[in-house]
Length: 384
Image (cartoon, rainbow, N blue to C red; front, side, top):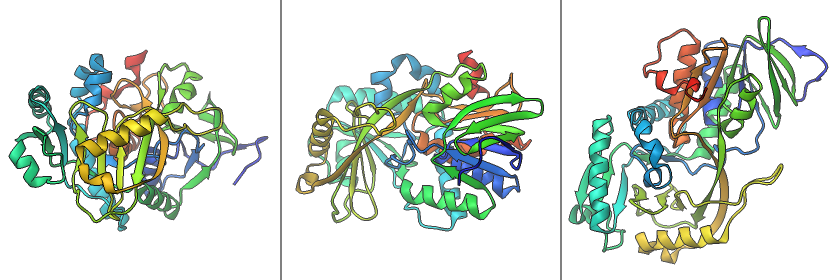
């Protein structure tokens, strides 16, 4: 619904910018509390809409491979991940709808003894920081995951990992926003946010809105929006590649990752296998989606077939790309100390995993309740 842009609408107490998993959850929680909330969603560069639905807890191999200088700070916030998965279970109960949530455990596979040694050290660091993982040897690994290549050497197992269907989850949460009286404007871009005497004025394609509070949960677009308010937040876009196969008899209950190479795999309830793991995609052009790179398509599928030989009989029926928001692997959450009433919610690595719980933490702070996880490590002021 488009509104006139020559007047200022004052019907909303809080405006949430961004309609991905964290923005939708925040809007739902506010509407549930009786807050007049408007969620404005551009719809472009929508990471949640293109997400594969992995629920990650253990440290992914790509962190040491791509961002070694950032891992130490990231490890200090590891304990938020199992809490986030627990909160997904609560979200499913509250939605009272099947969103194909399955916490069946995750495996990070090693194919040589050097990888096994690195996984053992990773296990030690994870358990030190509140993430329960364990190293399992080859015999046990092949017993619980007989579909793997017989040359595997071991794996790290994390019981908290799993998967969710993001299409079902996003749709259900969106309905919850509306059922509780929240308003969503889709396909509307926020162009500017200005401070006013009693709050903010949000200028968008859907109109101009005067509001007491603003929560910016716009993923990669968050950096440019807060820059207009004098806040530095260096969000960058990471286009990533994903594939999905045709239907197969269910055989894989775990979320699979590789100890060294870019790979994640999981099987949906309907039998389709999702294959991803961080292979690059073509950056998006103006007003367009990111594109597929042939090298990524071939490399991703070849590695998946090597690790799980049984998928050789399946066919890739669709490949697509989505935008991952990159910062320093750590979330940015909470009220901006220098601008009361302005809140930022950008989840760190594995943002879909963190989304609902991060939204809960910020809304608790916004509503005057003490969040049950400290927000101090997630302050935007670390970039000042």
